[in-house]
Amino acid sequence: MVPHLITALTGPINELEARILDSMPAIERWFRLEWMEHTPPFYCSVDVRNAGFKLAPVDTDLFPGGFNNLTPEMLPLAVQAAMAAIEKICPEAKNLLLIPEKHSRDSFYLMNVQRLMRIFTQAGLNVRLGSLDSEITAPTPVALPDGTELVLEPLKRTRGRLGLKDFDPCTILLNNDLSEGVPKSLQHLHEQYLLPPLHAGWGVRRKSNHFKSYEEVAKKFAKLLGMDPWLIHPMFAAGGTLDPATGAGLEALRDHVDALLTKVRRKYKEYGIGEKPFVVVKADNGTDGRGLMTVRDAREVADLAARLREQGEGVTELIVQEGVPTNERVNAAVAEPVVYMIDRYVVGGFYRVHAERGADETLNAPGASYVPLAFAESHQLPRRGEKPGASAPNRFYMYGVIGRLAMLAASYELEASDPDAEVYD
Image 1 (tube, one colour):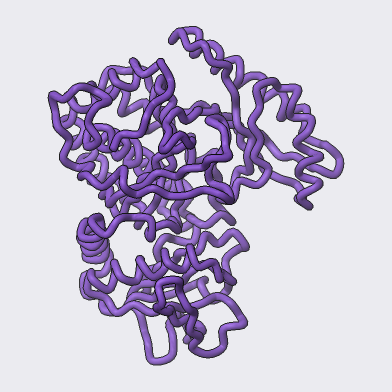
Image 2 (spheres, rainbow, N blue to C red; image 1 turned 180 degrees about the horizontal axis):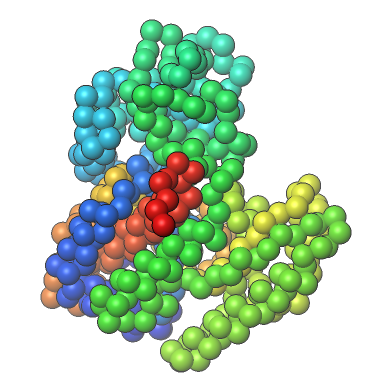
């Protein structure tokens, strides 16, 4: 199933799909060489937006929480990728400690945790759950919608190692984005692999750093294919900080928005795009979209301080990002593809669908639903020679390429922000 594109501006995307398919051997070789130089994040998910005239990632999550949305047909690929990742990091690994989000009783999220446990169990590991929740003082069963249960256990720190009672893991996998900061129990661990690393958490990570790295990757990739990097890159600007209480930073933010809108208008004119451009103002860290605002005129940002005050927010770091509309529809509802990866492999994906949101709004919000069927056919076996826009494997191979570009950007980003990296003059 290729979702319906409502825009008439399908030409550039079809041209991009054809170019990517024609260049597939060169693309795969290019990725292979990049991964020889850079270490992929352990896992990640990428939200992709298909405007019809451009295709670009708008968010990269290094602690993905939707593995339960992948179809059972995708599991063998996920298990193989998990095996490859573990073998590379700790070949003799026997025990894996999985640390989920703190205080989470969301059954949807816990089904994701269950799916992760299944993937790594089938990859040959003993998997148990350790909770950062101080209220978990003994093994605690949590019921799931499918009638099964998970058991959350209290963490046990012994000098430089972290584990559970009678469970000493070689590897610790975080499915917690550390947006509340880094707990002491995770600091200064010795002889254990912590994945992803602590500096991947939102206490350190910034979206502006990620998209700076993505811009570098997109330029390299566009040069390989002889194309304009804008077709796969959302332009952005660091928006500075905003104090909702005083409005300090609002004027600078308005200038950033105005400058970026001017750049986007120039590109729309170059490509003959008749739609009105917009930018999205959002928090520079975190995944919940707080403070998200769609802006078509710089004067509209005056409302942002009041909105943040109503939400009880303090001083907020912001990023201004070119808005990429999504013109895909599943059953008439706005949809966007989400690509899931483990190590350097695409292991599947799904469509995030939201019937109550517009093409210019975030779909990662309450009321969203998930349609995995779109990725049921293999996205790794494109059919070269077929008409662009008509083949599901071809369309999803293209999404997988964009997802891997964002993953590579995350690799660049983590290397640049690694506090333990050796620096050479």
